[in-house]
Amino acid sequence: MSLIRTIASRAVPVLRGHTITQRAGINTSAPKGHVGALETVVGLGLFTLAFLGPSGWVLANLESYKSKE
Image (tube, rainbow, N blue to C red; front, top):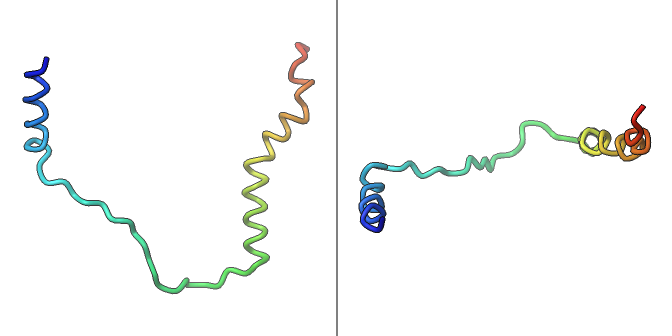
């Protein structure tokens, strides 16, 4: 088993070849358009509602989900 592991550990870098270094696509220029405070609040509110709304609905109606009707 040790022989196979040694061969594999030496063969992997050769077989892998040249790996490409990935770099984050960070853009430091100014934004194309101004996002207002109201637009930000509405967007965050809708995302919050989209994530927490269904779980809140289930928790509010938990007793009806427990019944076997």
